[in-house]
Image (cartoon, rainbow, N blue to C red; front, side, top):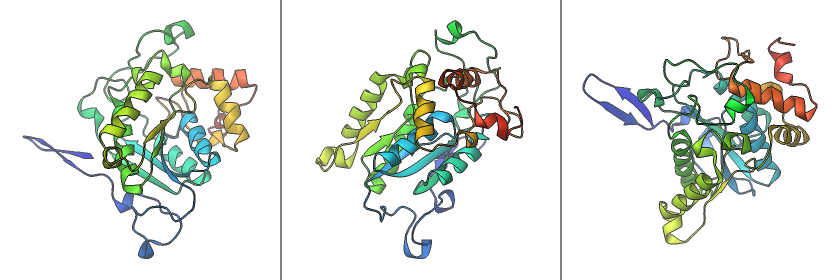
Length: 271
């Protein structure tokens, strides 16, 4: 849904519209944007931010035999350049469709990613490993997964892929295994298919127990071009990472431990 503010109230309208999707397969004249896939692979909705983790998850979904439908969000984030990265990744990894839903979590603030708050920089690893950082966006994964669930119902899909992982566990409450299990239970209680018993929803978090280095090695083995991705919370206007925020530091550490260069640094001229 997209927020439209007036002087007296805030109204909401759907952001799922044909102009937001990138169709593959038959042309629009023969196939509505919301039609179920024509391939024999089962459809799955993949949350795609444009970062390293979600790109890997998209590749895993394809490897595991799904027809992935990528869903990104313009939610008032300061690093909206990640949406360009999401488009590059969706195209490179062969998403069936890529939809960008517009919502406005900036209405509520409460995060350095959506409000006028400083993004933490140069934090030591032990500090990053404790507490909930100011970059946490309240209820973001719950909102995103709810949209993914709605699209899955329309597609006839029963699998939702999300890129939460072990390194996020200590900081973000909606990146824990308990959260993933709880949302899966909700999905099967709050949907027509769940109530009628015609299918069971699965929230798949294949990175949940992986380190950044393991994620990177997995993605490379699946042909992910990490030069297309953007992880930075506060990139330059041309998309160069700051190399100082938590996300940049975790990414750099992952590539070091994987023994691989980060191709995004070549793309942005930082190496």
